[in-house]
Structures are given as C-alpha cells and as structure tokens.
Amino acid sequence: MVSDAVPSFADTTTLQFRIDEIERAFEDTWSNAVTFSSLRSTPAKQRLNGWWLDHLPGQESTTGIIGAIVRTAAGRTSTVVDIDAESRRIRTRSGSVYELGIPETTFARNNTRLLRELGLI
Image (cartoon, rainbow, N blue to C red; front, side, top):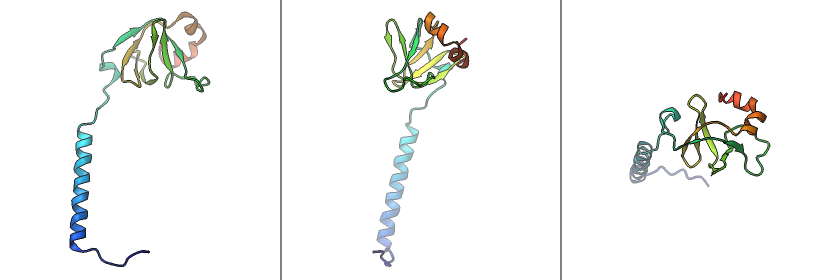
C-alpha cells in the first residue's frame, strides 16, 4: 500500500544526512582505490622462458591468452587477465606481472597464428 503522507522535515533531514554519509563513503573508497598502471611501466616479477599456455578444465576450447594459465617447467601462473604484447608482459589474477621470454618450442611451432595475433612473433 502506498502512503500519501508527506514526509516530515525530520524525515527529509535524516534522509539527506544518510545521502551525504553514503557519498562520503564512496569518495573515500574511490580516492583509495588501487589503480592499474601500464604493464610497460610495471617491473616484471620474472621473465618466463620455455612457456606454453594451458587452460583450466572446461575452458579447453578457449583460444586466447586471457583466461589461460602460463606454464613453464618450473611451475604455473594464475590466470592471465591482461597482456601488453609490445612489452611482452602479462598480468595475472593475483596481480603479478611477468615478461614472456621464448615460448616452448613445440607450443611455438603449433601456435604460430596465436603468437602472431598477440604480437609475440
């Protein structure tokens, strides 16, 4: 049921106070927000050589680097969320930045189109 009652002065004052409070909270949140810098200007945690792409179960049909996992003989990254082909750097879900070195030979031979599209060859 909709009320036809006109809000009292106290109700509108309280409402305005809450609106002001919410706006301040948003300003504080956005002023302290983490900003992503360019991958070019972000130092790489490590250079990955002999790397290849792997996908999580259920994503095998995905053909790009975003959403993929970069593997090396030493281990793997978390999923890739950003790439800068010019600097050959990737950012992972965990926030780490890696520089892609030379890809694993068999992967490079079988994925020349992908590597060319990414600007890596």
